Amino acid sequence: MESSIATRVRNQLGRLTPTERRPALILLDNYPVAGLETVAQFARRAGVSGPTVLRLVAKLGFESYLDFQQALRDELERRLQTPLAKAPEKAVAAGEDGQGAGDFLAAYGRSIVENVERSLAELSREEFEGAVELLADERRKVLLLGGRFTASQALHLYQHLRELRPGVALVEGQTATWVEHLLDVGRRDVLVVYDIRRYQDDVVRFARAAAGLGAQVVLITDHWVSPLAAVARHVFPVRTVMPSSWESFSAISAVNEALIARVHERRWGPIKKRMERLEALRGQLAGE
Amino acid sequence: MESSIATRVRNQLGRLTPTERRPALILLDNYPVAGLETVAQFARRAGVSGPTVLRLVAKLGFESYLDFQQALRDELERRLQTPLAKAPEKAVAAGEDGQGAGDFLAAYGRSIVENVERSLAELSREEFEGAVELLADERRKVLLLGGRFTASQALHLYQHLRELRPGVALVEGQTATWVEHLLDVGRRDVLVVYDIRRYQDDVVRFARAAAGLGAQVVLITDHWVSPLAAVARHVFPVRTVMPSSWESFSAISAVNEALIARVHERRWGPIKKRMERLEALRGQLAGE
DNA sequence: ACCCTATGGAAATTTTTGATACAGGAAAGC
DNA sequence: GCTTTCCTGTATCAAAAATTTCCATAGGGT
Image (cartoon, rainbow over all chains, first blue to last red; front, side, top):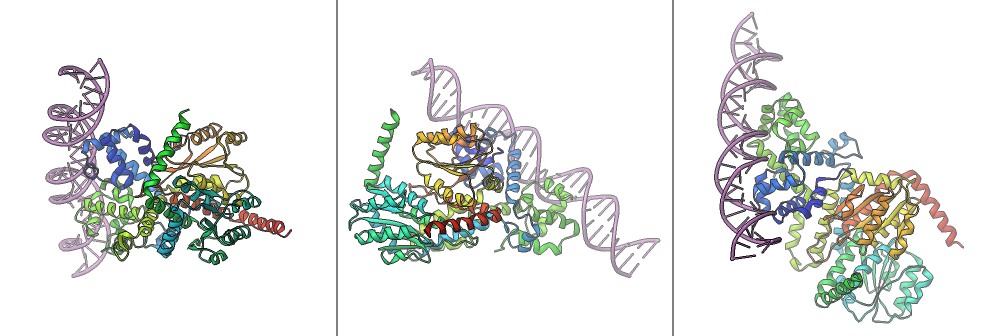
């Protein structure tokens, strides 16, 4: 229940005056360093006066600015000590950074970030734009399909894409029911399929069948590349390998979002109208 | 440019007097928090007098104690901004070369990466380990719930967690059916809920109800923080803001995977057995 | 044994910094 | 349209902190 000071700030955000909110947001943006500076520095950074900063910390429930800073330091100290690898000599031996070695989150995060960076960097711009072109074209229906672990990725893209355009369908549920989706697939239509090792039989078969019907297949796969690459129009190999025995799909998530954002950007006009209508309809439904 | 103040201290360690070495080591042990306190606090912590601390700081090459603190803050800020990236200047350089500002993928990727980095860096180690503790405990049932856009995140965690342990359930489908999940919720059980702005009424109500029944709530939210924070045991504020008008959930994805990987690591023995059984069963099913 | 030097802390001094009172001004209410 | 209330910055003051000065002491060398 002990909430961090950042959380306390966020919870109070509503009760603050507009001017007080400025330093509050600055603090959250540069957490917690901004709060460790002097009042004057902090105030200048936020473009407000000293007393405003002091009123802010008072509203946050601190006796004084010094109390506030002490609380920030205490929190920072607790956060920076690594509770898992309680091996201080390792950190000292690793040495170069003072601490952080042996920090699971930091190490794991570095791997994820590297995967995302490399995946996006290695991604062909032509393939990307090509796929966006397909997804942005409202005359084409779009089918989405994922495997055992990647169903959530398909769902992710589906949740966003269906707000941006009509004619988006998610292939889900029992494998036996999938075939119904093939009924109306034509050569203009698009199938986005997620297939990572171990490449799933039913997914592969479905995608092959769709391709056989003329559908444009966009394949998102790991960098060993699914056999589906043979029938795919656009292939996105992303990095999933981690130092642990587990794989990471954050890079897939990043590719998804890049696609969404780009479609959004490319068709800003119609999409804006569509989203306004969505808002209106939503209001109608809720307003009952 | 000197790499880090910590290394500067280590290099000077030999040239210090015995008494000066005490605060120096204290600083390295509680880096950099000790140095952000007042001279008096720092001195007391190290069991020396104020002037000794000042002489130490002078020997490290700083004009004054305030200079020293400013340098520490600058370093901390830089570090928290790109805590994991090896080469922050690379990103800047990449932004200006060749494909330049027109490279949508590069710019977008940089934003995602920054979100992921900062989210993981700002994440409290205590909260993280606490949540892992809950999720790794097989005696506790785990419920997962996401909102309109975060359902895929809940699904993502669900897909992996159910391989690692029994007693995991995903709250999905029509809102009216959710209530059935509350039937068997007790005070040992855990609810992982994803709630980002605009915080969804039905999700908030469900989580409140679960908390009312004594469930431990783990909340994953954006950095404006869902009102559910009030009833949550562990809160993870994640950065979702992008330069575009669209938000990114890649950081949520990263947090998910960090949780999964850590549970995996913590309970490696039983999980390994469980996954072997899963393989065997899968073979049986497929083998007809 | 004596002196000399290096070292560290107590106290005094100065600087910086946080806190407060007050006034101008905008927004809200009557 | 006037009053009232609520914000917010300026100017000022008090407190706290950094810095300096100076002296005590310990250890080593002659």
